[in-house]
Amino acid sequence: MASHFARCTFSPGKTPTHRLSAGLIAHTDRFSVRRRERFLAVRALLAELMQHIYGFSTLPDLITTSSGRPCFADPRLPDFSLACAGNIAGVLLADEQCRAGLDMEIIRAHSRQAKEHLEQVLSSAEQAWINAQHDKIEAATQIWTLRQSVLKLTGEGANGISSLSLHPASGRLRSVTLPNIQAICDVEPLMVWSCALSPDCDRLHLWEFSQHSGWNALRDICIHQRNMGPRTLRLTSLPSQRTLQL
Image 1 (cartoon, rainbow, N blue to C red):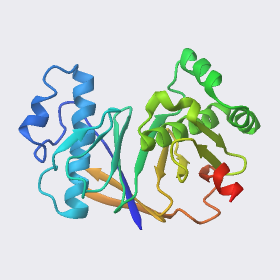
Image 2: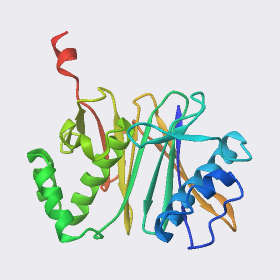
Image 3: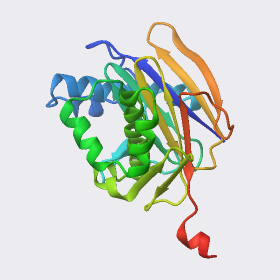
Image 4: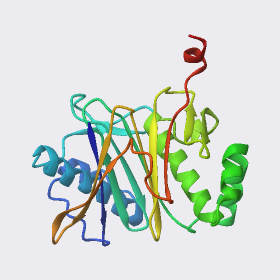
């Protein structure tokens, strides 16, 4: 099964909102300018992707879960995850019954306070892997992005910090909330992105959208292949303790 990761660069005040409902747009009237732009940009991109993949002319109705995670009101529609990094909007659209979690981070964009907080929440295995890398800031951004994508998939967000541990040296992760998750993280010149998905998903299609030129297929990633490149990480769930006992 295949999932789709799409991104676009948005310009302030120029987000195409013709596929969004008037109610959704009105919902942002009291937002700050920056929050409104990002909110509409990711949903406009989601609307374009739903049109491109499934033929929807307008974005289907959305609801928000108790954890604050947006999803489609119709449970028959696919799961998705939204993210922004700078002026780049991103959408991860899962296929069929898969779940999705997306995070994107600009490299070297975090403050010193954020870096200090990151050091406090990372495990010894995560810290050891970061310290073994040539570019420690880039490596720390990878770990943070991986973590955020998985926590978005589980719906825990910042409250799930202690429920997740990553073992990047062995390509493994363990989530207390969900026993089976896989995540793929890639480093680009300015940005790190991570897509967390259910294990049934075996292919990831990468897309770029432009309001002027439409869709551009970037590449396809076979998630289960072993060698993805020196700056790409793929983590899969460790067997649960219950599985080991059986």
